Amino acid sequence: MGISFKEVGHKYRGVKRKDITIALDNINLDINECDEFITVIGKTGSGKSTLISHMNGLLLPTEGKVVLFDKEFTRKKNRNPKLKPIRKRIGFVFQFPEYQLFEENVYKDIIFAPKNFGFTPDEIKDSVLNVCELLNIDTELLKKSPFNLSGGQMRKVAIAGILAYNPDILILDEPTRGLDPKTAHEIMEVFYNIHKKMHKTIIMITHDMNIMYKYATRTLVMKDARLVYDGSKEELFKTNSYKDYHLEKPEVLSMIDHLNQRLGLNIPYTVHTKEELLSYLMEVRVNG
Ligand SMILES: Nc1ncnc2c1ncn2[C@@H]1O[C@H](COP(=O)(O)OP(=O)(O)OP(=O)(O)O)[C@@H](O)[C@H]1O
Ligand SMILES: [Mg+2]
Image (cartoon, rainbow, N blue to C red; front, side, top):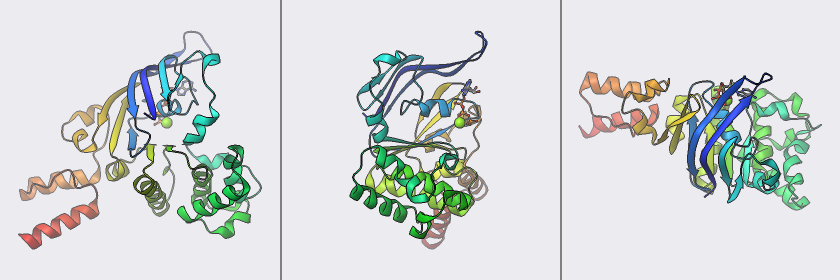
């Protein structure tokens, strides 16, 4: 098992003793080390970022235990195992990761973590070329200062710095937030290919229900610090419970509902995107 939560709770303490926020409440969860594409969704403040911050030791549970690749983490800090080998296997891309770029050129920024994890010079060179190809980063940019790039390019460079050390599991906090649709699509396809071709597990927070519905193989819903749903995206929208979780229906499902009601069709929720819906309708037309 890659990541496992056993009755995990997390309380944030404020300056005053009585200021306590329960951000995670009795979470139980098992995530495979390969082949999952998990989206974490839920209203703002529901505990999503707190949840994923426990998945590579950025935060420790205040109750229960988190197991990361067979290493147990609890609130007793001094007994916890070393984090570096875990962080090598579980890469974490923060929200707005471009804020963390700091080197004088793009190349140095991308190699920072691989160098830190002990990659040889040859491995470093290979990994840079590899991620540039994967993310469609022009190698001409490597010499430039990261601060002279566009927002989309900066985001890609920041993500490249994590992909460069080839973690088994990739965790991302709203990776498409603030990006133009083209760049958002481009980087989503990169994550999808990493998942599909390299069998990696991706765990991603998103507020974009269309992205969730296109890519997820499993969906976690957080509400008021609790994990209220862990299952398939199709089942999630078959009843009205998604409304209790303050979620919007993905656009394709509203279109499917409309077409099914108006035209008496029976289009299934296994149609995940508008493009797939169009193909489905063309086929219905051709085949009668
Ligand atoms: N460092 C902190 N100190 C105190 N309270 C915090 C801290 N970080 C988060 N919280 C609180 O914990 C709860 C969960 O926050 P969290 O950031 O995990 O939510 P989220 O689902 O990621 O929200 P968003 O969608 O806005 O990013 C919220 O009530 C938040 O105000
Ligand atoms: Mg958050």
